[in-house]
Amino acid sequence: MYTIKEVADKMDVSEHTLRFWAKSGFFPFIKRDKNNIRLFSEEDLGWVRIVKCLRSVGTDNKSIKRYIDLCIVGDSTIPERYNIIRKTKEKALSQLGELKVQLELLDYKENYYLNLIANNLEDGWNPMNSMQPVEEVV
Image 1 (spheres, one colour):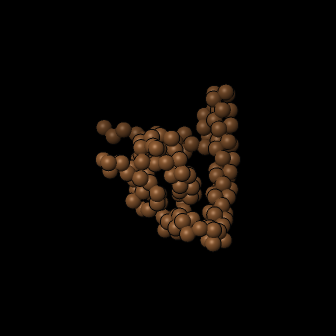
Image 2 (cartoon, helix red, strand yellow; image 1 turned 120 degrees about the vertical axis):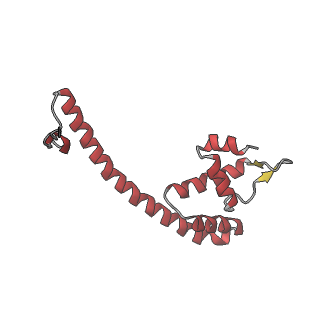
Image 3 (cartoon, one colour; image 1 turned 90 degrees about the vertical axis):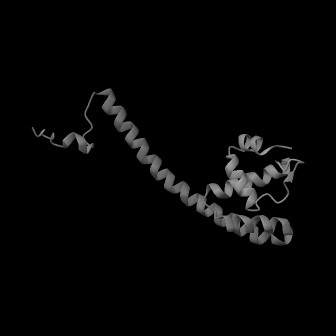
C-alpha cells in the first residue's frame, strides 16, 4: 500500500491533484487507514495511470468519471469505453500534430541562434535591434 505522497512521487503527480481526483471519485477502491489517510494499492495505481493519461490530453472530469463508472459496471460497457479512448486518442494525435509544428519552429530558431552565435551576428529579426534610441529629455 502506498500513501498519497508515495503515489505522487511514483506517478509524478502532485499530492493536491491526487486528492482532487480522489474527491472526484476517480479512485473508487482506495482504502483509508485508522487515521483516515488514503492508501493506494497496486490496482489503484492503474486508476491513477489512466486518469493521468486522460487528463494530460485535456479530457474533462465528467468524461473521466464516466469512463471509470463504465469500468466498474463491467465488460458490457467495453464499446462505450472504446469510444472514449478512441476520441481521446484522436485528440492526442491532433495535439501531437500541433506540437510537431511548434517543434519545427523551435528547431529553426535554435539553428538560427546557433548561426548568430557562431558568426557573432546581430539578430535581424529582433525588433529591438531596429528601434531608434530614445533621446533623454533634460
